[in-house]
Image 1 (tube, rainbow, N blue to C red):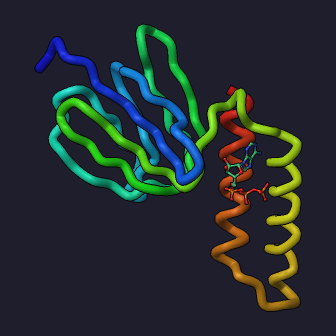
Image 2: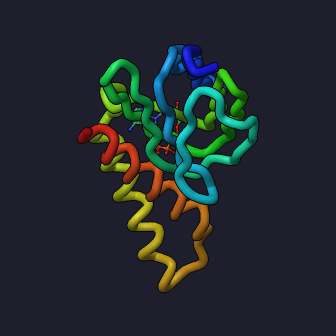
Length: 135
Ligand code: ATP
């Protein structure tokens, strides 16, 4: 097993984001960040909104992930994400506007009923996108 490489696939409802090999993949699990190497025990994890990265031949690639699932086998990790973007794909202005809208909604919670979880998730997506874009 040791000589084998880990396969990584990231897909969203819209597209195949990446299909590659990796030395290590690190994901934002709902119960905390986890790393996967080839030979990992099989498991399934729900993903949080967060940053994921993988390393391949000394190069690290970062993606913003908006929740979903990761399925791990000994040779492959498949990520089915609600949305996922590489830093270079992220429109920073759009993410900034999304953050401003979410912050305004959360601020309005003092005087009106809002969908707190939805606004908070939008805020977290925008902040992760800005973080990954700045990598
Ligand atoms: P917005 O309010 O700007 O649409 P959002 O967080 O509601 O942000 P999502 O529903 O998570 O957006 O994503 C919808 C689609 O738009 C997905 O395909 C996602 O990859 C893409 N997307 C969202 N924000 C950005 C961004 N800042 N740059 C590039 N693609 C983005």
